Length: 395
Length: 232
Image (cartoon, rainbow over all chains, first blue to last red; front, top):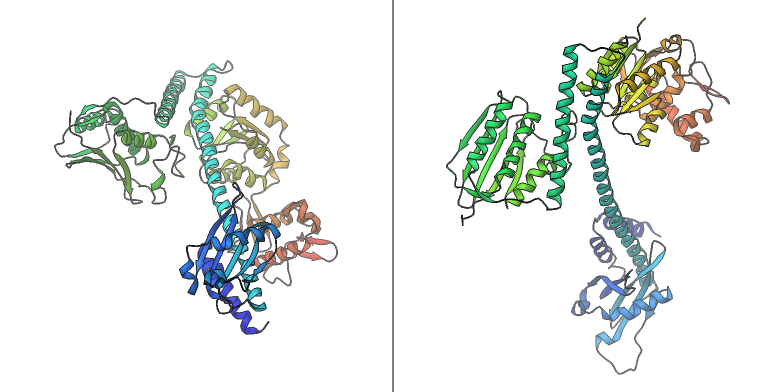
């Protein structure tokens, strides 16, 4: 092989392999070798694993072949023949049949495609009306067939890897779910068990203050456990759509003020600013919507301690838009798309207790109202949760 | 003298629970809320036993256990919220002496602590271990897995670091290629001498002032390698 051939092969190889998509790679391959090997049409047939028939997965027409582009039937019988034989087949039109149409004078060249050592398909070239294939043409075509098989194998491997990745992601989510649940349930249970058995110890005497301290912890952790179980049940009901919503006219601004008042009872230090317009009532489930607002408050208290909360409400003809903004640490852009997913927790937030269920539940409730909820945040500059609820005419 | 126990857990309520119970038994208590802090607290005072939570920020319990075992035989009891077998086995494989699955009762905790302390090595054996190691201008902080040449920090790959530990833990002893390959790479690499040659060469380039006249890792032709005992 001379240097020039080698270097042009090298270039073709690079160009073909760099194409991320297998069809684009094949296009490049056939176009680049057209100087050495001219054809009118090319088609790739692959065995369908289930039906065992042949599928055309790729077909291109160049030059004169363009008129016959849609018609890939010309190669099909030859493809079956090649696959049956497992060898190259060269077909030259027989003379003297009286046929003169170009399509009847097809010079066909077909190769079996060995994909990962298995005979998986065939590559068929056609020249209408000649010229006949020379030895060099056949060699070039054989190289293309070999390369095509490698590209198809690469496609298959990429597909397999994508599938495997998605299976693995599913499994990891499952794993995370099991370990999150068991960790979250065991933590309060561990405190209840640990502190109550401490009080039950017969070999020591605790002073009154310590006894009270331990009993308070047991009490609080029992509440936390109950809340966790409630959240999990709620999320399971939402997931299976068995949660019943009771829709009635709701004054959303009054609802929000009510929730805020309750939150302020437990957290008198929390500063809440309202920025409301006059709003029309909407149809909704007041209890569930309160639950959403409570969740947003409790998240703000947990993840942005000490931050002020600003709540805005505006109405347009179609919807009510609620903005719920804190001035805490915010959420990194990388995590924003996932915070409403079931059991998702922002990495590194392990020290704050949570199940990864709160926002999931919020989203399910808002969606049941045909609304939308999302979050906007810049790290270090706080987070704003936005809820849109449709305004529907009251019946 | 009262035994001092280091408790490591990121949940303040666990720290309080463990501390309150241990003090009734006359133990002294030190606490840390994450793995990195645990190593610092451990290095700052004599500790007779470590109670170690697994799930922690920064450096988890397994990581702490592994680091501690690089320079100390202190008894370690792993506290895990996950009772799965693989977690317990992993803890024990990393050199933990016992484990306790949360939730546990206060009396069980105290019984385990007593048992582990009883089984523990004599104090003289544990005090021989040190967090820091020096060999000429070479210095290592085992707790943080950091290596310096003089004042200059050296960055080693995990494999290079494990290879170096083989020498620091066997100063003055000749180690054969098979020994080193087996303990650093695993038994199936026993005969892969080329890997060892390349790794020793790379390690020397990072550690030695002159890689061709090494002071820290010396070749004994036909026998193996050693870190010579005398400080140079």
